[in-house]
Image (cartoon, rainbow, N blue to C red; front, side, top):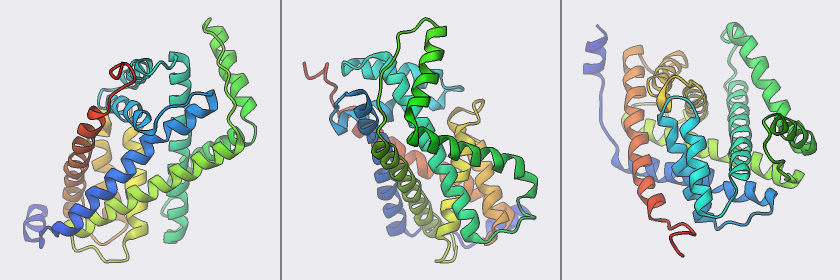
Length: 285
């Protein structure tokens, strides 16, 4: 019966919407990776925006290997080509993860309230939601009192006999990062909305749902350390949310979730080529 639902669905591709979704996806991927330039400024490191994009984007491809080790090694290697110390690179990556994840959580929670979902629909996830809110509060504390994070990180580094790292995360930079990453998640939501409009008969007013579904499924897939690149996990969560929020029968929802991986890979592969064309400081001599 489910196969019949998939077979009988009115599948078609609006290539204008599809092309637009890829372009918007590129904008999100570039902006997110290029934000490393702003983070490095907290360490008094100035880096051209294209090189910042190259470091963060190419190292992030390491997420397709289970765990985060390859990402750590990648950012240290690429940063070294720009003359950036390994400790600075790792600390920058840590800050990137904090602001990126917590901004995404904020988008998920905001979308939840805008969609007017009932308490009963999320009551089983209440402990998780409390943890997510705590992470947002933690991020705000980092912005308002960055010296606390500096002390904690240097305390840990001393225990591992690593040199101390000095950085000054100004409140203005912290708030700017939070705003940038929030905007990036909305951009990703917009690209997913255009993709949905391109391949399904979703209603035109499906934008908030698109932001909610994409952000929630991406974050869950990303932090599922056992799944390289969130493969399988992201698509499963996306299919479940497309079905739960209405507008799609269950079988079609999961097919759309699977198709979204191919769509994302098209955008990712094309922008990877661009990142590889950016020459590092070492390559420029």
